[in-house]
Length: 311
Image 1 (cartoon, rainbow, N blue to C red):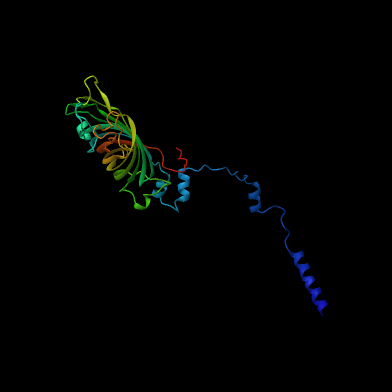
Image 2: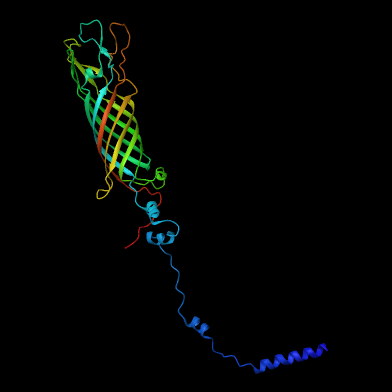
């Protein structure tokens, strides 16, 4: 019974093969178009540009955010300033106001010099983040000497070199970007700030002439020249103008510098004749100042670079 069914099935398959239409030797249209069509174009490396990168990233970040991350950030600045200062300090040493005196009399810095002084200088700065910048600079400060009770003092000239850490408040920028170190934003508009100052100041030699000296000596050194450390603080406002003078800024600040070490008197005036070998040591001077000037910021704040779009 089983063998019969097998024979019938084989016969049916043979009949189907004989009755089926013959296959064409020509290839089908799909195969023909594939074989006759042009070769696939070779893949070439593509250059990343701002346009292509933006098109790839537009689903992830906004255009404003992209421009913030890749646009030019002005972060290096140079500036010049002028200054008015008021010199202070109650104790500038003591001396015999007349050569014939047997005791000394104290003098103040305002006795020896005109308290109102002038100065000028320049500085460079680096915007590390919108919140703070580091400043380096130097200048020239001048106070005119004046007569005091029969004696005349020469002018006081000082040359300060300083480094300052400035804390900025970029009001036009969102607060969460104030400490952006990788892409520090350059913000136009009004920038209030506070500054801490470390300073080394060179003093010139200051001479005295008059009744304190014997008649055969026209002048003697009172202060000897030297370099003295100072500390200071200031507060101010910077106005960054923006277009059409993008990068230009005006600033004004007021502050105080205090000399850490006292200036040195010459050997002649450092001894108190009324107290044996007792040394005369003056006090430390300080200066209130008002400073104003202009700055220009340039450079790129980006840590990475992206080619600009061509065309």
